[in-house]
Length: 305
Image (cartoon, rainbow, N blue to C red; front, side):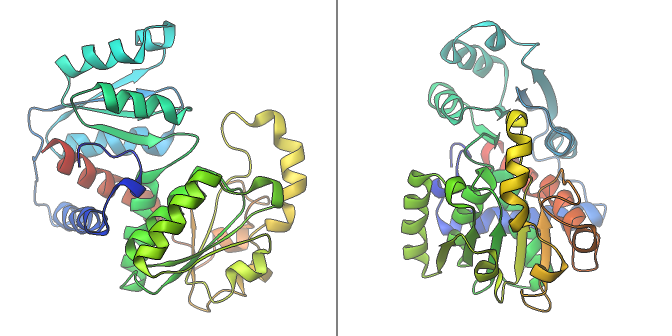
């Protein structure tokens, strides 16, 4: 592993190694055992999309690993004022030991990783969100004791979360069912790649427009906001189209009786999910949010250690 751009790029063993390391670092932290694996190293964190969980978890994680996190907004660097990604990459690699970037265009992350001789971590693009899914898989393992053979149902928009969940489930042998409206399906290229990953693992991928079909016997039920950053102008239209995909008590009851509920947050109660589900006893959203810290520490330690 030189970079973390997409879980599709990793082998099943590499994904499992990251999950194992994340669980190990979490246990050590809870036991008061320091792990300054990245002492003296600096991570540059480029944000053109703001975030609560991403910034806090990467900053705290890098600090716990003994390194220094350097926050760089689009207002702080020349990339936001027209400097090329090539030039930015070549400058930053002289100063930093790694780059984390959270942005809109996936092509920007690909170019940054190609040009920079230091590790690049994709902390979110409009296409993929691999760090979140590593945290999700950690959380599912903690609550279910295994991953292989489980079923995850994702209900909602065919967005970056749906894409990375397909990749992640395939790598660990989880069945995955994705339910989206007809005009909001997952990206065709990502879907083709995911089908190859599922073929390799033997797990089953189901793509449907019917949320009830997707959620049948699911061990993990997942949803995300219907209106991602940059889609605000579509809010009213999207809410109308996606309301039949709301994860409410009636729909959730069709999953396995011991199913857990996940959401990458921020959540909008009364829209993609109702309060009785997201705040119910089977919701693990805050365990999931916490595990962003530990999963990302595993990524940083692996790439920069």
